[in-house]
Amino acid sequence: MKKLVLLVSVSIAVFVSGCGFSETATNSRDSGQTVETDSNLVSVEEAAKTALKSGDTMPPFELPNANGQVIRSDQLLKEKNLVLVFYRGGWCPYCNTYLKKLQDNLSEIDSSGGALVAISAENPDDSLTTAQKHELRFHVLSDRQLSYARKFRLVYQIPEKTDQRYKGKGIDLVVDNEMDKPELPISATYIVNQKGKIVYDFVEPDYKKRATPEEVIGQLKKLAS
Image (cartoon, rainbow, N blue to C red; front, top):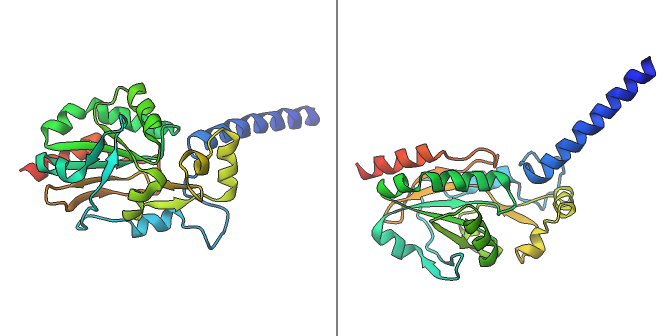
């Protein structure tokens, strides 16, 4: 009987472990709770501490959208305040859910004086796939090699074990994003006023936590009042 109980317990543990690995590889690819120690890595926690915050000036950008059209921040700021959303990629289900929620609230974001822009390291073709899949009606921009995200100091390197888990699921950040190292941006949200000043930031190491659309809309309304 003891052997039977032990066998069942092991079977359950293996099943849960398998589910956990699947979730780790798709939902918590690198949650920031890095176990590996490597002095050459910039952890997600370190990046969150040094990232641009409210009161800083937003670096200007000229980035291609999903259709290859170059979008300039100075042109957008002539019309509205800017809502900048950095996301990990179309492979991240949390990012996809968040982008869809933003789309669902796009009309109110717009009427509250905000121009919404989402940025990732994916190439324009992949950005187009993301935009079409979720029927996004805002700019989805391509930041190759995370050049623009680096100006916000949002970029961190994932450890080797995490990188191997990604590759096991068909995601190669170095190849897909044309980078030297497997890096990602923090999933951050900023609001920038028309003078180019950051007036709101949500920079959270845990990618499962995002600024809610309601919070973004509330901040935009405060800015307009």
